[in-house]
Length: 250
Image (cartoon, rainbow, N blue to C red; front, side):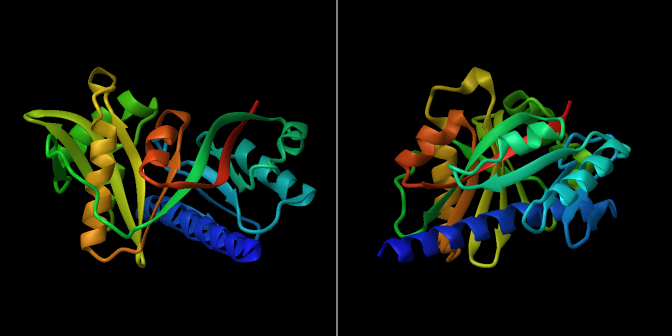
């Protein structure tokens, strides 16, 4: 039984990471700025803070790390390094040895979609389909996350992934991305503006996306949670599968 549970968790981790990478690749390819080799992949988009990162395609070793450092130092824009691992093997000491410091930490989480959640219908969700909506989305997003996804990225990718504006009556209060891979929905960029927090809107927005995915016969939902959202997602039934640490060079 323990072996089966571990296999399931590894599958959830794999599917979660594949969905996340798919979103990064979509953004990078829209600018012809996605580069891949056997050791690592990276995206560099000019005048943007996202995704602009590098990640490993195989098990990390000293040689790969040295090449990674060289790529970052020679990059035309700041590049972060994202690494996923089990909770007890985070390799901080190795990254520190090469001059990296931790920038952020997220928990990879998953939920098997089985039954509908109760909705309260206080919010409306508008899918971004034009440049005007893309600008609103791009302006709201940094208020929740502290970095920017440019409207140009949104305009180039809005036909291939779903950007939503979250509205309370006539006021846009938040953002979310719903990114599909096979029978899985990856939920990214879920944020409520500070002025509208602590009113249950983040939970309500998540429920809306989950119910929509269930109606569309998706089998699994995945996300990467900050400390702020972790408690909400656990209450909805999400499980913690792995950790993502993002580093920058000092």
